[in-house]
Image 1: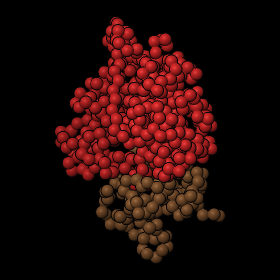
Image 2: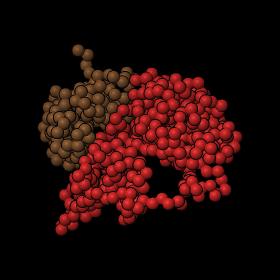
Image 3: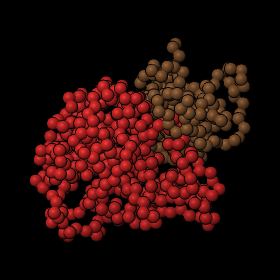
Image 4: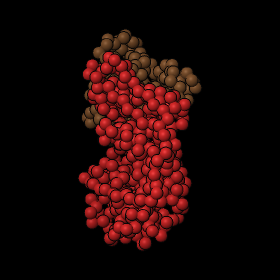
Amino acid sequence: MTTSDPSPTKPSPGDDGTGELPALPRRKVFEPQSSTLSGPFWEATRERQLVLPWCTGCERAVWFPREVCPNCRGTSFDWRPASGAGEVHAVSVHHQPGLGRDPADGPYAVALVQLPEGVRMMSNIVGCALEDITVGMPVRVTWMPLSDGRHLPQFEPEPAV
Amino acid sequence: MTERTLRGATALVGATDAASPTGELDQHGRALEAAMVLEALDDAGLTLADVDGLSCAGNVTGLAEYLGIHPRYFDGTMVGGSSFQLHVEHAAAAVAAGLCEVVVSVYAATPRSDRHRRSAGGGFGGRGGPMAGPNPGAEWELPFGLRNPMGSYALAASRHMALYGTTSEQLAQIAVDTRAWAALNPRARYRDPITVDDVLASPMQVSPLHRLDCCLVTDGAGAVVITSAERARDLPKPPAYVLGVASCGDHSMISQMPDLTTTAGAVSGPAALAMAGVKHEDVDLLMGYDSFTITALLHLEDLGFCAKGEGGPFVEDGKLGPGGALPMNTNGGGLSYNHPGMYGMFLLVEAVRQLRGEAGDRQLDDPRVAVAHGSGGVLSTMGTVVLGTEVTL
């Protein structure tokens, strides 16, 4: 297990205990280290903002952050906010926990989430019964705090309009 | 050996390196490897779009994923300092044989600056070595609790079920048929017959995969010997001739798989069969890597034994088992025979035994063509080998 930069947490709404933007309960996870390339992503999670790298060459979002655009071989990227919307592309309820998880936390849903920005990322589906999660279900990003002020993006069912 | 030489068949056309009087470089890990690849290509007047072969002394699929390319030739040969001479040797043979056209071999290591650089991107970096530097899996999959490799295959199965209506019962039939073959193999780990209900009643591991949808964890070992056809004819046992061979890979992490329901076997399978001049109805034995039931099902579709999405109905009638129309994994497979982690060796060994008529109680009736189709990583890199007896030449 690793932890990231111990830099002070920036104040952000919902972290002040007012419940304005309630955070998910913190669970034990493998905490990622930021690389040079991914720093902006993890910094944005301190403000609970989902940002994606966009290739300035082909104007397409790329996931994950890397040196070379897999679409056009471009090497220049901009970080832009994502809408936060998504759709469950595939899902597996893990009864056997993965590395870094506490078995006492029980089964959880690992999913690939397709974003309208055109990329697919791994995440968890939370905030509903595990058996109710289906492929194609609309979801929206929510955030689980990490130990150092960053947050891990999670997705929950899109509230009914 | 006949008059066959690589002399003059290939050339090195681009080259670059990075070094600094300080003894340290700013970049490291994958980023440094990528920079070297791009510089060497630029030096050659080529681009990444031209590259269809990739060599490095380590995790070569991870490097291909990082570069965003889908090579049809991989070389991860790691023999120490001379690895890159061997990469050139292998690439020269591959290019001369028409397996690929443009191969890049790359190396990057930063043992000096690693001393004061925390391994970036995740906990598996360590100092130097092929896993140094940003490790995308540790950053973009592990935090979500993905249990690998099982969870990756489960996600593929989830997508296949949602798109095509594939059922747990259909996946279970693969485990049932494979166990029926294992019953005929005295060295198989599990030999007692099982039913579809047994598979569905076994504990759910990572949905939709039950315990009996998953391969074993056992010890195991094997080896094969390859020589020229000419030499093979002078040896005591009947040769299993390599009629066709091809590979392709299109990701390293499951979250980067272009299409969760189509593997790179859709490239390697048809290429190998075409090289062999073999049609599906000519295949007497399919040895299809069965790390999980979904793995084998995807092979059946991607190799063209049935249409995409029709794997479920295709296997339903038990045609993969003893007496069936398409015998698959006659040794009992990774599901019931053995599985020490990298099972591809056993696909080749069983194919040779069947073609020689050495398979004992599970021997097929005069098989002439066998396909050994291996799957590496998490449905990442596929290698297809078509073998045939003397009469197929």
